[in-house]
Structure formats: structure tokens, C-alpha cells
Image 1: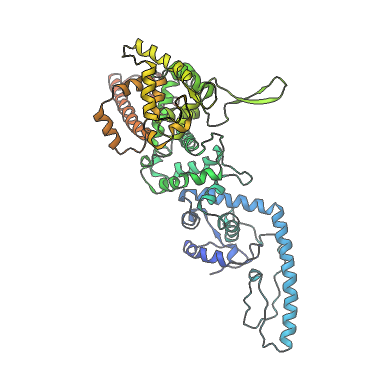
Image 2: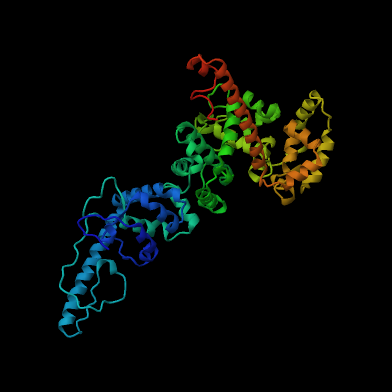
Length: 528
């Protein structure tokens, strides 16, 4: 049923089932809010079903989508398009008036009372009306889009949604719609900040993240972690700008739908797992002793029980890809021109995520390119024997100091070449590591060059354990590591809680200040 033109009416959610058909046959004029249906509105709380079933977005996108439609409508009113639409409407009205005059004349001359007048929303169609027309006045030109003010707060009307559908949704497939919604209207790429509204809605909506509702600081850290992981996997060039092509080549939209439908957040291991966030943030927290959210070279040397050589740590700071431009600083060259140079004095939390994802899973393309760039000291895109020998020399010294059996460089290199089978015997290129047969052995060479613990483990590996590893349910090395490390961290946290309860029981009269001084509470501590 339609409402009176003197007020806006609520669009019942049952009506939305007919929207696809209505949108395809609705008025072809570019002037909106001509009909009573156009003035009906959809409250934001009823917009969820429309977002998922018609627009094909995850349901928790409904509020950002609602705001985008309102913002786009405001841009439309303030732009040239609205003026052109009104001018087009003027021309349509003039043509209709001429046709109305001709029809009235033709009727008087004996055309059987059939009128070919069309209403404003029928302009552009070819099917005549067969009922005799009265001399009712034609609609006047719409100088303003609303004959009446919108309710407060602003709501999306059917006319607004119809315009957004025609401009932004109907002409595009699912991936293009997703990209166009994420990015800012005037941009051709998606930035880090564009994701925050959607992750915020996920935090507010998902039952698996409800326990974080009273911890705004850690909600922010979770959002940063998810977004950085998205850029790690999707933005392979590390420009900080995701393009439409990168969206289309990725699984990002399907993973957003998965997290929308899956109640257990930890089953969505790509990007959204809380357990994975827990592992990443705790590892960062353990290294960041001064709590300035910056990891120095000395801090990073402590990672993984001092498993990394100082040579690779220096290269991580000097050459490893950085996800965003937040650490950039402006410098001048010799001619006085402004240049931008990434600050390499520390790793931010986002930089650390890139490092840790690459360190704990060297079997994916992003990780291979990350470490290849670090080891390729001269930057010629070739890894030669001299570069590998310089890194391995540090490993040999560390292995000797730790009392492990020393493997000569030539023997190590021969073994690695047999596994990788490069196109050239003189050097390695990144494509050598990315061939299908290298997916599970590509990281071994990097471990041999700079991670003494993992290389020793490889040399002393148990064939039975290796077979179990190949047959387990984990999709990636990162998933396996995150699961084991989460269990370790959870057990340590449980032990700390038991010790804290024991201390509290033994000292019942201690005040809160003494309790806080022990580092067991307070906003500066980890949320775990």
C-alpha cells in the first residue's frame, strides 16, 4: 500500500522480497521521489536482510551501507548531476505537455478515446495506456528532491535506495560491488582506514567477539590485526592500496561472508581468528618491554629464543617490506627535492605482523618474496653464492658456539639445490621458490641462512613427525604454529591466574595498589 504524499511511510520488510522485480521496472526517469513509493523509508534496523539477500554483502555491512547511501544522496543533491536531472525532467515535462495537447486534439477528432499520455515514471516506455484520460493537471517540476523534510535522524528512502542501486550495484558483479562499497567514492583504491567501519560492525555484531565489548583498546588492536593480515595477503605489492583487480583475485569477499555466517570466530583462520590475533599481539607484547608499541633491533633479536642472526635482523629493518606509510618521514636529496624515506629505526605493530606471518610460514608467496628481498643484499633480484655464504657464515659461528654439528656451506648449498632445482646453478631467483614442487621446501634454505633453531630442527628431524605434519588438518604452517602457540600462551596465562589467586589468598589484606604494582592488572597490561 502507498502512503499519503504529505508524509514518509515505513517500508515493511516483507515488501523487500519484491524489490528486485520492482527495481528493474521502476520509473526510468532520473528524477527520484516522484511517486508515493519513493517516499517510503527503510529503517536501519530493517536494512540487514536487504543488505545480504539483495545487495549480496555480509549482513554486518548494513549500517555502513546505510550511511553510504545517505552520504551519496547528499553528494548527489550538492552536485551537478542533480541539476542535470532536473533539467532533463523539464524537457520531459515539455514533451509530455505537447503530447497531452496532441492527444486531446486527436481524441476530439475521433481516435476512440485512447490516450497516449504517460506519467513521469513511464517516460521512456513504449506501451500506451488504454483507459481514457481525464484532464487532471500534470505534475509540476521538482526543484527540490523532497516535498517534505526527512524524519530525524535521516533515513534511507526507497527513492534514495533506487538511485544507489542503479548507479552502484545493478551494473556490477559481486566483487565490483564489494570494491566500490569499501573504497571512498572519489578514489580508485581501498586504504587501511576504509576497512575500520566494517570491522567495527563485526566487533559489535559477532557473538565470538562479544567478550571484547568492554575493552575498546583491544577491539582497536584486533581491528588493526585483521586489516594488516588482509593487506598482507591481498596487497601483494605492499603499496598500502588495494585495487579492484587485487580484490577480484583474492578470496576476501568469500571470507567476509564466511565470518558473517560462522559463529565460532576461530574457525575463520584467514584474517579474523581471535586466537591468531592473540598469538600475534602476545608475541609483540613480550618483545615490547618499554610499552611504546615499537620494536627495536635489540627487541627483535630476542624473538623465538634468539633464533635469528643479527645479520638478518639488520636486513629486516633495512630492507623488508612495510605494509603502510605510517613510518614515513620527509627528507631532502642533494638538490633540495623532497623525498620520502621509510623510517627504519623500529618496527610498528603492523610491521611486526608482516614479519611474524612471514617467519612462521615460509611456504607462501608473500613470505618467499619478503625473505628474498631481505637476503638479496645487492638488490639485483638474484640470490648468488656470495650473498648466501655471508649469511651462512654467521650461522656456522652460532652453531659452533651452541655445540651443534657444523654443516659446511658447500654441503648445505648442494642439499638445498637438490630440493629447489633452480633454473640456473649460478644463482636463485624468486620464481625458483614459487614452483609447485618447492611449496614445502622453499623456507628451508632461508632457515639455513638465518634461523639457527629451525635449521638445527630440520637437520635433526624425525621422519615420523614429518609424516604426521603432512597428514594433519592444518591448511598452512601459520595455522599450525598459531594453534600450538595459542595453547602454550593459554596454559601460561592459566598458570599466572592460579599464582595470582594463591598470592591473593595468602595476602588478603593487601590493598589494590600493591596488587597493581605486581603487574597483574591495569590498562597497560595485555588483555589475556
